[in-house]
Length: 423
Ligand SMILES: Cc1ncc(COP(=O)(O)O)c(C=O)c1O
Image (cartoon, rainbow, N blue to C red):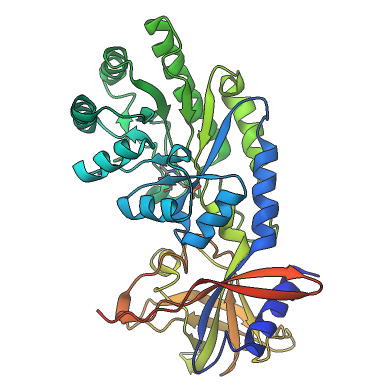
């Protein structure tokens, strides 16, 4: 079965069961569990098995508790970046020792909670380090603590996703004058600093750039350990950021290529001297989810066809506000869920329901002629889309269903029920 046929099958069943309904449920998201499982399995196999590696899913990519619970069952931990994400990961049953707390703005309360639970923590800056030291002095902690460095190796294709640029707000800027020495001294003065972390960036960062950042991290850790005279830094957290292919249906992310890029550009990461933590988000789930929305109306405007659907900025925020950086594939289906034929096509703007002109998920796109009552699918939206809604216009939060394939049919489970936003 092609992936389009798979989506058509899902839509057809969801329509039959009333989960997707023109009047009651015009906007729905799906996550294909079988594909998620295959992809995570591929991740676990891509890394060397003779070195301890914790793959901590970046919760920001999809914070829904049943999703985190499933990823936990598949063998992942979680990277959290707020009190809310920490609560979600704990509610999903992920043990505190399989969590990592990042964030550039941790409050006193967040630090106390994470250190109290014993979750690993990556300190973002010297002021935060002073707070952590103060809390350790008061209460002690079982947490493994590290510092996030910004290796300043440069930006990728999307500036807003690049965290290793010269002026990034994240981490301690390793190449700024005097900072490397200041950081080494901080480690030497604080033997409880047993980790180091970097995240070069997300979508748009080429693998060699990520490897260069990781290599800087290893060089830094080697230097600290040499100066300390023992293996003070034991764990290197190399972040996430594997770019996702938003153009084809390949369901397996390029974890092999990522590992190969590290072998080439940062070979000592696999020396066995360090335990490894990763923090992949988008590459774990993006390809395995899609959003389905009814076409409520169509119109011809200035020689272009506009399809007004229920999927806009509230579920595709980045695509709407940064269309060049986040283009999405859009497919058209008949009201029955059958794939539309290409016998008749037109150039479309595919619009959402939000009350501003830029609320478009595709612009000037040639698609099978979309008509009132049809369904559009926004592909590759399993991460950072419907799971992270934007509450503009108080639009309802759409339901998310997990799809389980078996015996030629599919079963749905509710990952998140629909929710009305009333404030
Ligand atoms: C510290 C950190 N780790 C991991 C991630 C996940 O990145 P991605 O979803 O691109 O894998 C992010 C993304 O913002 C991040 O900031």
